[in-house]
Image (cartoon, rainbow, N blue to C red; front, side):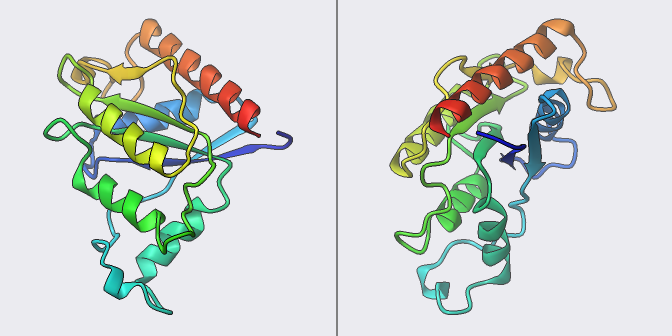
Length: 185
C-alpha cells in the first residue's frame, strides 16, 4: 500500500475519561508516521431501524458511513459490558452494515483491542466483535491478541501510558496490524 494509511478508529465507550479512548489516543501517538489513526465518533448514532433507511436516512448515519467508507483499515478499541460489546458499538456495526449489500466494513483489514479495569481485559467483547466482523467479510488481526486488563493502573492522568512494557506491547500490536494491512492491500 502506498501513501499514508487511513485507519478509522472506533471506540466502544462513550465515557469522557474512558480507558479505551486513552488507549486509542496512545495507539495513534505510537503509530508510525505512515499511518493516520482517526477516531470516528459513534455516540450520536440513532438506534438502527430499517424503517429509517430511506432516501434520506438520519444525518448521523450518513456522517458515520461517510467517515468509515474511505478508510483503508479499521481499529476497534472497546470495553466489555456483560461479556459482550457495548450496545452503542453493536449499533455502530449495524448502521455501517446497512443498507444490505452496501456495508462500509466489507473487506477492510481490522484489529481489535479490548481494554478493561478487570483482569480479563475484555476477552468476551473481543470475541463477540470478531464474530460480527467475520460476517462483514473483514480480515481481522489474529496475533497478537489484545486483551488489556487492569487499565486503571496503565494510564497517567494526562492519558499517557505509565510503563514501557505496555507501550512496547502497543507498538508490537501496531506492527502486526500494519503487516495485516500490507497483506490485505
